[in-house]
Image: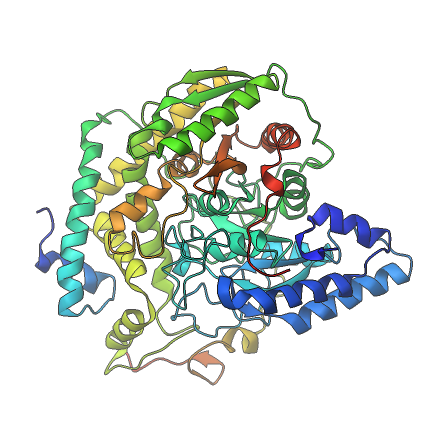
Length: 487
Length: 94
């Protein structure tokens, strides 16, 4: 049996019935990583020893007759912008280097309490700024479906690991599409929960009004299971909403008869690959066949979301990244005085895209330009939110492509920042409005996965997951695996 | 050209970044291309539109003012490039 390609709920069942031990499962995943990661390059840091220790603890608990829960003993991995006590956290940046956090992120603490086995830390675009994982300060990750293509980004290591069987599931973060776009490129399920659904304590901040942590899994059931494990209020994150967390997995009942689904025409614009559009249209037809009422609609301010986002997110980033000054942690490059020390440290520590966004954000916030750029972008953000509010008076869900294209080739967009930014056209508006959205496998184009994006009402992940589950149960795309040339 | 090389230099100083001549030229060109794209936003009349800084209806979120254990000093300093006498050490400021 290929333990590495089981889903968390399948493996969790075997563990609960003592058919497999957590140590066996963990060893299988460690072997898989050893065999494959030289080519996929998903991991920045591997923690095999710690993982085996966690696995032994779960096995010991079960041997004592305890049942630590469905995720206990299931090997997973974390995007490297989630703080892990005692394990280096780099954000794929030279400026953090070998920094070892003195505490766990809230989501890490919750997963450890649920018995998770943590295999390591996954590659990403530096500070989560990018759409291809080529902006990693260390090395690019490759798409398991075609090693000459990007896995998407910024959570490229997370999705590549899940798609290649190098982790049963992973956590990522999504500021403008960084979970969903790579999930689409690598044929896995990726959820960006509602802003406020999951605590971000211990997530290295990029753009605080947009960032959200979410699960990357091989099917919708796992997505529900992992969301349930990480969601909920946290006094350490004032934006983590004090709302009850539903039992997402129990809520997964197939059936979308009568569900009203809007299909916004602006998401099928210029730049979309015709074959991707055909796959998405077929997926929407499938939703109709399953009983949903799908109807074309309009979100008229969609085209303004991208320019507004690239003012808001860099502005917040320029402020958040001011903390990397060579004083508290990470890299320090000496200088004649403190200002020169700051400048030397930041210039050598940050990569080109991070510097570009700091420059853009600093410019947008600087005296004389604040109203013209930053304030204007915040006003446009209101218009984008209102588009969604209006649509959701009529519809339960919206369905769109996750990305206008399949995974592109390494290097193809690296020299043109604006072309790279356009990769996130279909995902950015959702972060601007704070809504939950997921990408799920819905077909293939040129042999590469295509993702369908479903967008829900704020804090209504249940409807989102139910619709995704219903679609998944009547299709087999999520069961296809890339051919990686190893058993 | 909304942004000149001199402005790029000024913004870099504000952001505490030291740019090479090559970076200055590249960022001037790239930021201009990006800002030109942003001008699209001026097509929208936003005179009476409230800005959205944040999507949640939250303002100040307070906790009770009760002392709790925090991160011990030695662990807070453990990642510092330079520490001395229980404090972060920096080059001379004044």
